[in-house]
Structure formats: structure tokens, C-alpha cells
Length: 338
Ligand SMILES: [Zn+2]
Image (cartoon, rainbow, N blue to C red):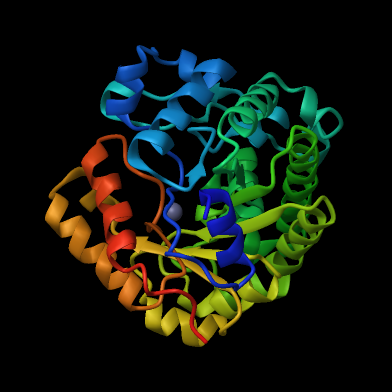
């Protein structure tokens, strides 16, 4: 099977020749240095972004290709300035300022924003030049984008004191995501990695996720499906108490953090949804044999799509990504549950 078909089959709950292997975002120093790319150009140049992501995927043998390297893209498009981070210490792009009023959000021309355009152009390259792999651009989820727009601490207080206003920010983020998804679908993208770390059960109550956030996410899932796009939902941290609700959004795959036990996750999320995960990301910077062992455990516990439990850290060793692929090939009789 081609990598692209392998991931799609896992999303469709169909048989696979072996478990697919991928990663969340891949701002990995080793690969970036091999391309000769410099900071912060690799965030801003679509050609460089595509080259780095394809090098990671092709060299390691992954089934997906992930762009971009940061999560603040939609917040930028909606009017927040971006600090591109300190590459030397591995910090990621983050907002420089915040908005005070939903009316300040520039909701009209999301697809014309220079950062979003960079991602769409990079996706066009990876779709054309890596046709056997599934290009899965990272689009930030509603709670995370709202946190970028107003400040995460302020947002968390708002979810308690003024939940309707928080919901208004989430809806702005969802509309922005839909516009980005539309632009990505127009260059041939068939999968979205919808990543919402701030929706973690470490920060939001399960009841709030179910009552308020779930419908906003469902709207984006439905929109992606209407454009013929698969959507994988990722939430960091302890998400077990919202896994049932995450599955109810209709997302094709739930990518879970290493803090969540896969056996428990399966019981909560049901049999039909693809579960992706969940090798501890920090281990990707360490010992090969540990990664191999933990990847085998993830497969044995029922992962349908083998990944680190989040993105791959900057210091990820290429051989540890290859360990994931090796573990998947070793377990080639895993197939799907029947
Ligand atoms: Zn994560």
C-alpha cells in the first residue's frame, strides 16, 4: 500500500497491510540543518517548508507529510503579530500581542494572509511532489486559536465567567479554520491535522468541552468532510474524559497524548474511530531501543496509526523516527481489529 492509502484506510476503519506511521509537526533540527535552511525563513518560505517536511517524511519512511512548524498561523491571519521564537533554544512561534474585542478579528481575508498563503503554497508542493504520502497540514483548533487571540489565561477565566464570549472567540477561530481548509482543499490536500492543545483536560472541564467546544469542532469536521477532506483531531495532555465527545465530533482520527492509556481510550472512544498515538515525544530525542519498545507497546495496545503522542521535538533523532517505522513493519500482521 502507498502511505497515503494506508492512512486513509486506517481513517476509514478498513484493513491495512501494516499500521501507518506519522508525526505531528516536524520542526526537527537535524533535517532542517541538512536542507541548509535558516531561521526564521523556514517558517516563511513555502519552498523551504515543503523541502524540510518532505525530507523528514521520505528519509524516515513516514506515511504523512506535515506542514507548517508552528501553531499561530490563524491567529496571525486574524490580526495578531507573531514572535517566531528562539530557534537556538527550540521555542516555537507565539503571539506578540492580543485582541480585546471580537470585532477586532480580521475574519474576511484569511486565505490572503501571508502566513496562510505560505502554508497553502507549501502544501501544493508536497501534494504534487509526495503523491504517495498524505499531506496533513496542521490547522490550529478553536480553543488554541482563541487563546492566541485573547491570551490563554484570560480565555480560561472567560470560560468560567463569560462562557458565551469565549464561545464567540471559538466560532471566530472555527470560521478561520474553514477558510484555511477551503484554500488547502483547492491545492489537493486530502487530510487535516486539527490540533487543539489548549482544549486539554488539564485546562478545560469535560462538561465545558461537551457543552460548548464540541459543536464548534463538529462544524469544522463537517466542513472538512464536505470538501472531501479527512480530519484528525489532536488534543494534548489528559484527554480521556473528553475522548467520547471528541469521537462524537465525527473526526476520522483521534491523536492522543502519551498521558492517555490506549486501552482505556479505545473503551471511551468506541470501536469505529481511528486512534493515533502515543509514543512519548521526549523519547524521540533519546534511545532508539526505548522508542522501538514503546512503539511496539502502542501497537499492542491497539493504536491504529503510530505516532509520537504529540509533534516530534526539535531534538528528535532521525533514527528514532525510523524506529517507529521499524516497529510498524515488525507488527505487519496487526491489521485492523475484526
Ligand atoms: Zn500535543
